[in-house]
Image 1 (tube, rainbow over the protein chains, first blue to last red):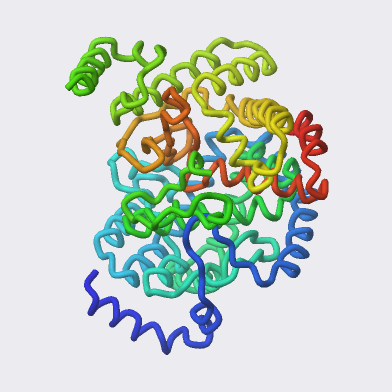
Image 2: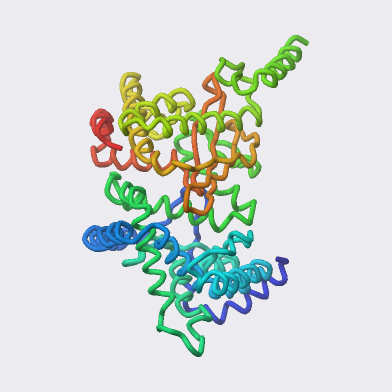
Length: 271
Length: 202
C-alpha cells in the first residue's frame, strides 16, 4: 500500500473511531521483543483470577466433556463452521486494510465452503489451495497505524490489548452476515465462536492447562505468550516489523549490542 | 594460506560426510546454513524415533533429556533463563541450577510429545545472524493448520547446538526466563530454593 492510500485510510478512519481509539493511540507503546506495557496490572490480575475461576469450574470441564463426547471430526467441522461464518467479516477487514487480493480469496473461500462445503462444515477450499484467512479489526487498526496500547485481560474473553479490545468490540458489528435479510438465528456467529473456543480449549487442553495451572505466575506467562504471538501474527507480512520482534529489552543483563535491523536476535552468549 | 586450505577441506568433508559430519566434533567455523538446517532435521528425526518407540512417558522423557543435552546448549540456556542472578550465583549454584533446569525442561516439553505423532517439520530457510544461525521451519500436526517454528543454532559452545526456539513468535527462552523469574520472586531471590522447586516442576 502506498503512503497516500494509507493516509487516506487513516483520514477516513479518524472520525469513525475518534472516541473509541483515543486511548489506544495516545500511549507510547513498546512493540519489540517481549516488551510489556501493563499500567492496569492490578485490575488485569483481578480479572485474570476471575477468568481462571470460570475456566476451572465451568469452561475447562465443559470443554473436556465436549471433546470427549463429540468425535474429533465433528469438533473439527464445528470449528470450520464457525470459521466460515467469520469470513464475510474478515473480507470487510481485508478491504479496510487495503488488501483487495486477500479480501477476494476470503470471499471466494466463503462461497466455496458455504456451497460445496455443506454450509461451512467441511473445508474443500483448503483442498483447492485457497489460502486461509486470518484477520480482524484489531489488525485493521494496526494497519491504519494505531499503536498496540496497554495490555488488557478481558473478562471471559482473555488476553488482549487496548487496540485489540476495540477490534473485538467492533467486529461484533461488522460481519455482513448479521445484516442478512433472512438468518436462522440472531448472533449465530457469536454462538459458533463460543463453540469453537470450547473445542480449542478441549483439543489444546494440555497446553492451556500448563500455562494456567502449572506455571509459577500464570498471569505473567499468559501475558508474555499472548503479546509475542499477537505481534508475530501482525508482522508476518511486514518483514521489517517481523525482524523487530526479536529485539529484547533485557539489555541490562548483557553487553549492549548496537541495534542492527538485519540481525535482530539477542545473543545470550554475550552475557 | 593454511587456514584457507583447512576451511576448504572442512567444507569438502561436510559435503562428503553429510549428516554424519554433525555428530563429529566439527571445527567452530564449519557451521553453515546447510549444516544448521541439517541439525534441525537430525533433531526432528531423533525425536520422531523416540515417539515411534512406543515407550512409557517416563522413558520418553529420559530419551528427550538425552537429545536435549546432545543438541541443545543447556548451560547457556539455563544461564539466560536465570537472568541477572546468574552473575551473582556461585559456580556450584549455577551447576545445580543447570541440571535442575535440564530436567525441568525435559519433563515440561517431553510430556507433550504425543502431540507430535504424525507431525512433520519442513525447513523453509536458514540464514546467518550475529549469534549463529536462524532456521525457519513449518510444522504440520494432524488436524491443525501449519505453524511457524524458528530454531536458533550456534557453535559458540564448541559444537553446533540449539540455544533458542520460537513457536509462532513465542520465544521459548524468554518465556522460561519469565517463569524462573516468577519462581525467584516467590522465593525472595533464594536460588537454592528455586533449584529445589525446579526438581519437582514441569
